[in-house]
Amino acid sequence: MSTRQLAVKPLSALLVRSGQGSAAANSVPGMVQPVEPVEPVAEPPELVVPPMPTEPPRVPAPEPEAHQEPERPAVEPLFSWAPQLNWAGPGDQWSQAWAAEAHPVPPPTPLGNGPAVEAAPTPRDLELIRSTLAVVEPVADRATAHFYALIFVHHPEVRSLFPAAMDVQRDRLFRALLQAARGAGDPVGLTAYLSGLGRGHRKYGTLTSHYGPVGECLIAALAKYAAARWDPETELAWRRAYGLIARIMTEAAEEAARTSPPWWQAEVVAHEVRGRDVAVLTVRPDQPYPFRAGQYTTLETPWWPRVWRHFSFGAAPRPDGLLTFHVRALSTGWVSSALVRRAQPGDVLRLGPPAGRMVLDHADPAPLLLLGGGTGISPVSALVEEVAAHGPGDRRVQVLYGVRSPDDFYQLERLWELAKGRPWLTVRPVVSEPGLAPAVAGQLPGLLSDVVAQLGPWDGHRAYLAGPAAMVRRSVAALARAGVRAEHITHDLPDPQPN
Image (cartoon, rainbow, N blue to C red; front, side, top):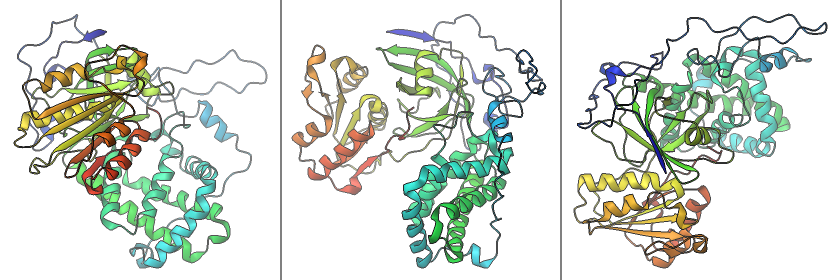
């Protein structure tokens, strides 16, 4: 185990860039400056941040040959303060590939407006949307590729909003739009889903003016791949659905802009390695960051610009304003691997706004059942801390912490410390492959979903789950069989893409 720390200085001493996504703390209404810790950690050598360059460096050109094109001009980096990172512009390979397009794609038809388009989707519209989705989803990969081709060819100004490597990001926007259209018949659920998307997309630099071009390209991609199912009536249905999507997202984004920045900068002040693949990071945001225990945020590193990944908060809100994240480096995880193996005190990350449904209702005295698998114990730990700080009253809390091997219990000692002197809190370690390492006290063998079923019934409990998607889905089914009502089971399934 190793720990790297940086002295926690006042916010006024934080030497980080202040750009269009960052606002001074006193410009966010209703937010209180975080309190400095009374006993700061030992002061290391002062962190020196070089000034932001006024001009980007020129792109080095290869040795000229007779058949090569003339040298291209320098282009802007995605992050002007980190010019060594990915580039997007007339000199990069991506732009060259599009410039070499042999058969230009015709521009999409403008969406237009008017009473017919601005009306809410009708039941007939929803029926047409569902029939279109049935045709398009089997060829979603091709439809997605065509969708982005239309965007980047006809609206190159939005290319810088996306990461240079599109293999991970490629289908997210398209599938999110399809999911939103599918939910047009549920106004309450759709509004909640799209409002979160609208607030979250501010961190990408998305503007209201971008929604029109995206809608044009969506309609054109659907028209191409819906084939015979596409007609003027279907097109009008999709235009109405997209108009509703755009209105909800832009209204949510504009409302959020009145009270918070689109993103926060956060300096890493401590980096503790726990085992081979897990690290606990402590960061200090450059301005107050309001959140609730159990929520998560999206996080971007300077090593993978424009690539954002979800990470849960590993501790309840603190008086000093510091935030904690538990990160496991995945074999295919760009961001997680960089955070575990490359991040160190002094590095500056970017955070999106908080999100997630796993928040407690302290007015509800029902007992709590908290399930955390792997680093899914991160939001569970935060929830336990919040109950301890708020006062449990008559509420009892049971935590089931599941891992593959006893060596993976990186957070167990912390939970045991919380349980000392608190009879309302019970912590049960669960190991799916107990023979891999020496056992810990009180461990239960088996999959977390199987163990929770064996320990039931759980009638009357409020269950909160976090961890790998397969574990969450199995546990939800087990809890339903063990007497927990569906509306009393809360979780935020992890992003299907690797972190």
